[in-house]
Amino acid sequence: MTVTQTTSNEATTPGGDLESRNPATGELLGKVPVMGQAEVDTAVARAREAARTWGAMSHAERRRHLTAFRRELGRRVEDMGDLIHRENGKPVLDSVQEVLVSCIHLDHATLRAEKALATQRVKTGLMANVRATISYHPLGVIGVIGPWNYPLFTPMGSIGYALAAGNTVVFKPSELTPLVGRLLEEIAADSLPDRYILQTVTGDGRTGGALAASAVDKLAFTGSAGTGRKVMAAAAANLTPVVMELGGKDPMIVAADADAKEAAKYAVYGALTNAGQACVSVERCYVVGDQYDEFVQTATEAASKVKVGGDDGQIGAITRPQQVDIIRDHLEDAVAKGAKVLTGGPEKISGNFVEPTVLVDVTDDMRIMTDETFGPVLPVIRVDSADEAIERANDTEFGLGSSVFGEAGIVEMAERIKSGMTAVNSVMTFSAIPTLPFGGIGESGFGRIHGDEGLKEFSRTKAIAHQKFSIPGVTMEFAPDQKSATKLVKVLTKQAFGGGIVDRLQEKVRNLLG
Ligand code: TXE
Image (cartoon, rainbow, N blue to C red; front, side):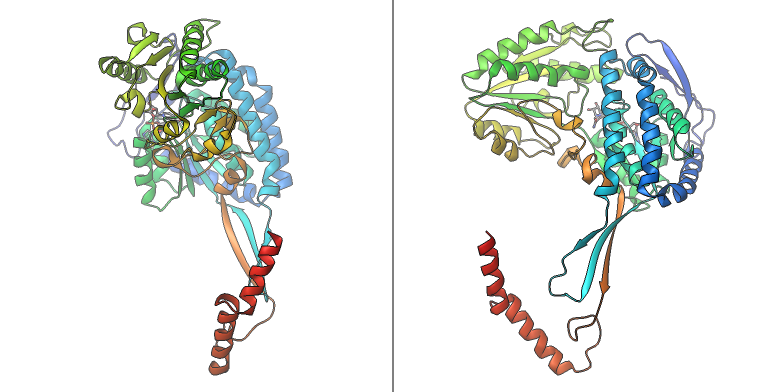
């Protein structure tokens, strides 16, 4: 990628072109402009204008338009799949699967929005004279800053839900995959009633910075925690709220009663798919006692059979050249501190291709166990018990995904892992289930995309308290007789909350109802 500066005023007009290249071959795929603050602000202003009509539509109208958008995306699965394959470097199968899962999410958001965002009537407690409702409204314009590892699926987790909630979107794809963003914009323009409902602004971190500093109503960011902090700092100037989908160091736990062979098969897929470049990749694996030998043997055999690169490759190139250095560093650090390579390893790295690697004798002080590797690597640790596994799995700054394998008490084990999502007896399944919220804690970020939570994330919550009649001393007005109103409030407080008759009655009813 080369960025040619044509102006010294980077903050307003970075200018120049961004080259998009195939990471597997180096082939030049196209050029896009590096947009500055002025272009980003223009896009946001157009999006705001479009939001007036889009946000005012009924859910049924938006559903009709978004269905047309989803159909156009589904119809062009070959174009989009081929572009993802060439621009990101992943195999064609993974690329078309990415289009499929993106369609699943877009479809779900489209069909679900009306119900998830329907106005709810809620209880009012003592204020029986008030009718209370909660309603959900579009925020306006959502800025989406996307990554390169899943250049369509990941941003769609925000874009689809933001559009269905009645917002317009300005999308800044990664500088490594700008053409995917461009094609998505084209598909939207061909199928939505206004081309400014979904716009793409292209460029690097400066363009992302411009979007974070712009007048968007909310910003959804996916990328590294370091860049996430910069985005938050820029958004803070306007008090723009943010959703942060950052990296992970996802643990997998194999319990004593798990099927070790089956677990090993999933571990290899979870660690290696997309060449390990998934925020919910299996990044470390804790195997309990007797299961260890069979697990390690099966995983090593399976990993060594995974085909890398070429037309029938099961994993492709590493998309971002600097990522190869990070993977190599982590592997070399582990080997230097005593880890044993069972297949793959740092010497097998060739250009942008990394051989699937299984490591044992790893310790908690190795970078491979603490930092996000984002490569096709499976480090395995033997532990004495599930409790030890959970404790070590939770000993991290991250908390995005995780997986557990076993039978007895396995869901309870899943509950004890401090992460946003856990797959039981599989890996990553939660990403493809559009009803489940997706997001992390700690260094993995905050806020939720997908599911009803994802629709609400891109909505403004409105509370309405509609008073039907007044109760002196309780309603929000000056009581005409202070003394008797004070008496009434005292009696009410004691009877309702101070162990009085209402309090005791309520407890009895609660106990009766269980
Ligand atoms: O991410 P960045 P990078 C992790 C993974 C990887 C690391 C770095 O561990 O090794 O992050 O990847 C835009 N203001 N993940 O460097 O920098 C940028 O243009 C606003 C996890 O690619 O976070 C791109 O569009 N925006 C992950 C986006 O931020 C800025 C996915 C992400 O870039 C900006 C990818 C700025 N100052 C990497 N600087 C996941 N959670 O899935 C850059 N950007």
